[in-house]
Image (cartoon, rainbow, N blue to C red; front, side, top):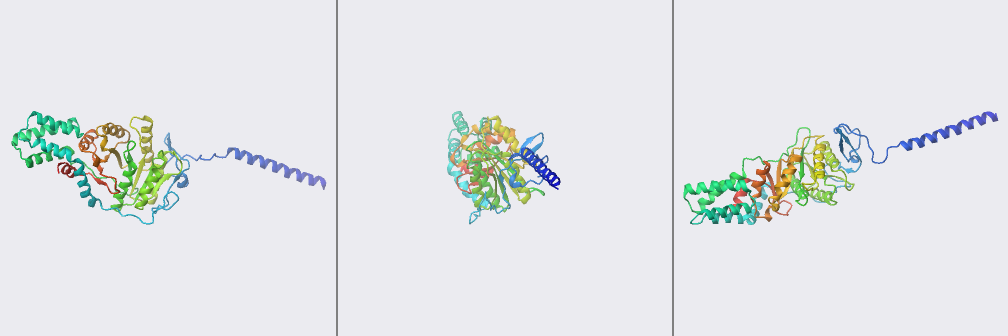
Length: 398
């Protein structure tokens, strides 16, 4: 009996030792914190919780994930990342704000129009006058080629008509300026929902041009058009950017997808924002990106990666490049590089109320071959409006 008991005790001890060793071995092989399985198809989440999936990387066509992005469960935006304000603002209709913004443009850009009209209404229009006209246009950032075209066209028309009356000169100048601004360009925003997914808008630009503010203001424009909108805070390098964007969204009841990890992979936030937009069946997903210098190759490559990752789920419908109108011709070099990396489809000109250099509209469109679609004319929440060629020229010449 004692021998039997000893044998039983021996086996119990042996099983306990083997079990402990197995536990230790499994602990040694446990997946370290932050390591998650690779998802080969971005549309198949493989059962991962969207609240825990964030850093997205493209390696041989694969999408890898790590935790950190907070995704609102629905369009109320009520979670730890976004808390809706007690009262939600109703943005004013887009058409209602255009007259006010045009009036502001009139006040800020009269130097160009008045200067040209004064020159062209002189009793004698000689070579010196045409030189002054050309100089005025160049100082207004119209660009060399458009300036030459405009001066040549006006020379011919003034010579043929022989007119010196301010009304007739103004009419000719208006017609030629409208031709340069080109009202035939398609300035509509691609923000209509597709059958199976939202429209996707990517907003890019250099540091300090007002991208986050522009995204917030554009969200107001879309809400005023009764669209359901979701924002993605892919500017993960500027500490306050995500909170700033979320605040803009809160004011009009729009949720924001953002990372709770400083310096997180921006492509991951963009990926999750689009994923959430598809799941929640919103109309438009807008992605805010970090400002980057156009001469920084690494940063520009990263921007290209953001776009590629987004397109694992759907084509980016609109890429808006935000430019500061006060930078003038310097903005052209910025625009060209961004266009090469992410195929810019439209320009947003901010701070147009702070400069008399309205000619930059023509120069940018000529340089890129894409239209100015939106203009910012102030710091107010609704100081963003669709660009209209004729209204713009009329404001210059008022």
